[in-house]
Structure formats: structure tokens, C-alpha cells
Length: 181
Image 1 (cartoon, rainbow, N blue to C red):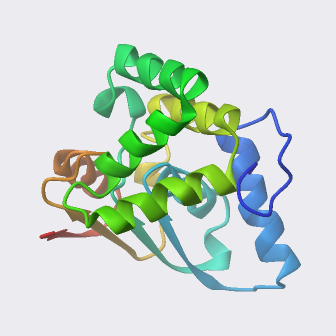
Image 2 (cartoon, rainbow, N blue to C red):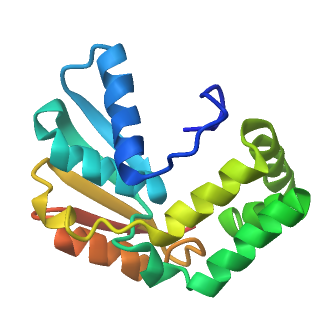
Image 3 (spheres, one colour):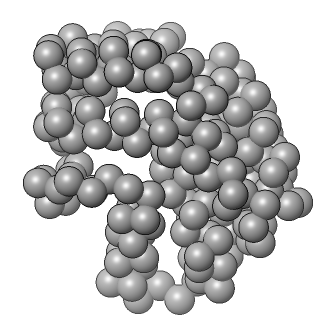
């Protein structure tokens, strides 16, 4: 939503709007059943889609999932990042690349920073940080009925591994795998 080849000028970054986007893509591709993979805030969107459309999914795979944004991002930190994005998008992109790929290599961090610049406006990035920091899928997690695998990297700087464990613990019969790297 608002990223890459999508329509750039959007205001609604709600969970409902993003779940509707997943449904629209699945419908457009005429997918009757498919596997769904989601990462970070995309994991939240995937969980909500899985609860609303279990008949369409074969499996759900989550990477760095978290139940509730306020549990992993202090509101002041989110506001600070949003202000940095709106005030100095270049510096914010480098900071995001460093947090996302803390062990480099620097060429990959540079590539990621450039891809952020090319794929979204600073305002869209700010709205995504606000979404990431406030989304709450705790009510959805116990209602997931499709086979679910939750991966999380030890030492993840975006969402602590405990958040992934907590998300997996709330999903009936989910399997949790901790990875190095």
C-alpha cells in the first residue's frame, strides 16, 4: 500500500485496508488456496487475513511476528523515528538499513537504503512506522486455524525474539523456530 508499483497517494494504512489489499491480490490472481508469508508488520496483516479467510490458506509462515506494536516499540521512539523520516529521509533510511541488517555488509545496507528511497515517499514510510508501532493482533492470534510456522532471528533488532515466541504461543498448534544470523 503506497509502496513500489502500488498507488502512491494513499491515506488509509489501517489493518483492515491492508488485509483488503491481500484479498484483492489473491482475487486478482484467482488463487483459490495458497500459502501466505508475512514479515514484521506484514505478519500482523497475514494473521488478520488468515483469521478472516481460513478457507483460502493452506499454510501461514510468519517472520519476526509480534502481537502488539506498543510491546516492542516505545511510543517516544516511534515518534522520534517518524520525525526523523519526515525531517531527514536520507539519514532515516540509513538508520533503518542499519537496524534491519546490523551485520552488513555495507553494500547491502546501501542497497536497502536506496530501495527505500525508490519505493516509497517519506510520508508513506512515516505512516508505516506509525502502523508498525501501534498494530495489535492479539485478538486474532488465538483464532488462527491454518498450520502456522513462526520464524524469528536471535538478536533481531526490529522485534525481540520474545515477541515472536509470544505470537507463536498464542496461535493454536503453531511451531516456533529460532534462527541464528
